[in-house]
Length: 292
Length: 118
Picture (cartoon, rainbow over the protein chains, first blue to last red):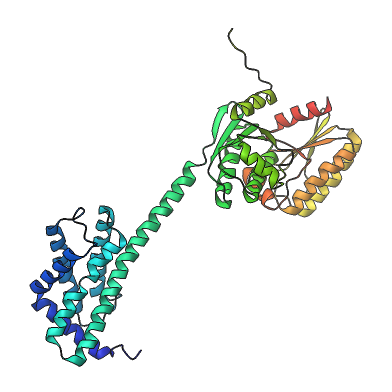
């Protein structure tokens, strides 16, 4: 890349830049604060001006000390790691406060203007271009890093929720001696169906239950793949020596099943969980007797 | 030679498999069981596989074969006590052993046979 400054001059400029920041800290901070307060991404409802100024001052300090380390901008090196750690902390607290990724990134990006205007005053023309390039590159990277932290946190949340959902969604309930119920909620993908089958079979082995009711009341739609998973669960249950009853199939789902020509084979189905329970009682030779 | 013992209880033959099945053993069992069925005129076979941690497709096919053979010789077969992991593996492999009776334990297997032969 022809525009990219050579390594030695980058190091030199780093030192210049760091010196600029150190010597004009107050001025730069003021200009930066002005930029931030004027930006339309400003959220005075989430952060007050004092805190913002404090955060800005601290960040400037960390940044100038990282730059004065002399290395060209290398995020892997220890001085820059300090900057990243500070940014991570900042990103985290802003995320928790409710800032969007853009608003957090703008915090960094709005530092460009004051630094560049400083460079205009201090530097000769040929150095100026390289300097602007350097400032721009550094701040872009740092801003991107805050976004990355944001995203990583979001992904962690999604993963955690997914795991929790898997845990929550497969309760096997013993509703009578020898009768288990498994209320299914949501859709079954390969992974979930494996878990559902596993916990159902374990429960059958543990309780010695002969009848398992798979209740589909909480299942919004069904497709061929999900039907196949269900058939597998039923087949595995049968292999162990227990019977499966499907219940709670909604009329729309029943229509879909017919429409897709899904063959449920000789699986027993009932309209409601109550009907399935009645049928399970009959199978186990039990009758319900009222008092009157 | 290694063999799997076949015990007679009333009209039933009880086969409890407690060692790891290998192919030769399974085939020997099929032969022995055929002979015993003819000798004893038993009407039911209980195959207890609760001791098996794993079951490969070959053994599963032999077991299904035993069931169909017994039927020809006048006896119902019940496969008993398949473990959850084994059941899941067989289903994954597409071996659902349709038409073979299953039961959770020997007692329920006996009850099932009594119902079937009544």
